[in-house]
Length: 198
Length: 372
Image 1: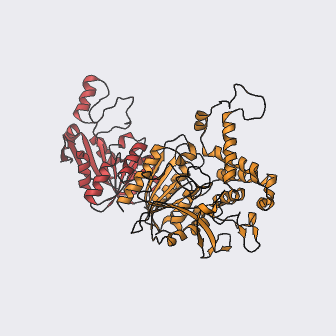
Image 2: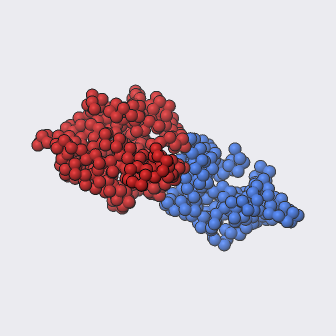
Image 3: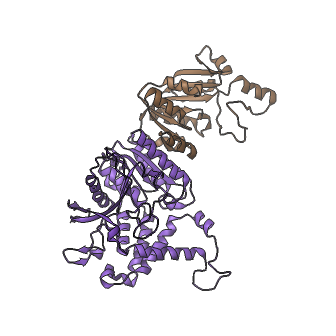
C-alpha cells in the first residue's frame, strides 16, 4: 500500500465514519475497514473503479465530488478524505467548504508543485514539468489548479479553515511541516498531507 | 395451454386491505422457486418481476415454453446464483400467470371480473407477496431484487417491511412514476380500450380477444425499452426480406417487422386487462408522496444495505431518477452503493446480456452474503 495511504490510516481514529472522495479502487477504504474498523463510504467517478470496489464489498457510489457531495447532510462523516484530486476541481474553494460541511474533519493530500524537480524542470527546460507524481503533459492533465504546500497553507488563511496537522512526504519518509521549516518542506516534499477543520 | 398444472399457488387466507379500500381474501398467489432454502433460512432472495414478467424467472417457462425472463441473471453460478440462494418469485396480483387477477371469476357474481377487478397498487402487490415469507417460514430475506416495476416493488417492500431483508437492489426504476411514463402507459391502455374486441373489458365472457389493441400497446412500450442508438445499430433502415421499398404499408423495414412480431407473440401470453391493471399500478406509484414529500422517510426504519443500479441508455427510468433514491438514502446515512452501467440496450439492459451489469450484481450479492 502507498505510504500516503498508511499515513491517512494513521490519522483516522477507530470506529469512525469516513467518506473517501475519489476512492479509486478502494485500497484505502479496505485498509480503513480492516485496521480501524471504520464505516467507510466512497465516491468514485470511474464506472470501472466503482465496479472494482463493489467486488471488494465496499459501499461506493458513482459520482462527482463537485456535484454529489451536496446530497450528504452536515457533519455526516467524522472524516472526509480527498487524495490528490483538489487540483483537478474547477473550484477548489467550494470543494474544501463542502468537505468541511459534510465531514467534521477533512484529510487532503496535494502533489507539491513547489518540489525542486518541478521548479528545475520549468526553469531549465522551460516546459511544463513532468515528474513521477505529475506524469501528464500540459494538454492532457486533469490538473487545472496545481498548488504548492505553501500555497495551500496560504489558502487556509484566505478561505478560513484550520490546519490541524500538516505532514510532508519525501522519499517515503514522513515529517511534520511547521512555520519554521515551511520553506524547505515546500522545496523537498513530494506530497503534502493536511488534516483540516472548519 | 395447460397452465394450471405447471403453476404453484399459495392461497392467501389472511384478508388483504387494498389501497382502493376493498378487502380481498382467499385469493391465489402463483409463485415459483429456484435453488434450495438452507437450514438457517437466511439465503432467500425475493425477486420481483416487471410489467409483463411472471414467476418463471429462469429456465424454460412451462407455459410459454420460452426462456424465463431473467435467465441471464438467475441460475446456477449466475448473478443470482441458485446454487447458493433460494430464489422466490411470485406473479403480481392483477397479473395473468395464476395470481389473483382480472381474468379470474368473481365468486359473488360467478362472472369473470374484467374491469370489475379492484384497482391494485405496487403496495398491494408487495403486501400480497410478503405472505410467501410466512409460507416458507423465512424471518428475513437475504435480498430483495427487481428491475423496472420490480424495482418499485423492492422499494415499497423495504419501506413496508424494514426488517425483512438484509440487502436491497432496486434496478432501473424510480421512486415516483414520471409524467412521461404515465403518458406511455396511457397510450398502451388506450390502444387496448379502442380495440372493438375489448368490449369494455368483458372480452373473456364474449369469447373475443383485443389482440390488435394489446399488440399495439406492446409495440409502443417495446420502443421505450430500447435506445435510439441500439435500434439504429440493430436495424438502421434495413429492409425486411425485400430489395426495394414497396410503396405500401406492409412492413418494409426490419424494425416494423420486428415490432409487429413482438406485438404478435405478446398477445399469446398476456391478458389485456392485466396490462391495464398493472400499468395503472405503476402510474399510481409515488413513494415520495406516500412519505409526504420526503423519500428518505421511506427508508428511515431499515438497516438494510442498498445497491442501486441504472443504465446509461435507459431513458424510461433514467439515471437521474435512480439517483434520487441514492440521494434520499445518503441523506439519512444509509448504507448505499450506486453504479450506472454503460450499455446501449436501453431500459431492457437489465434483462439482457450486459456483462458489466451481471458481474456487478453478482459481486454485490456474493460479497454481501459472505460478509453477512
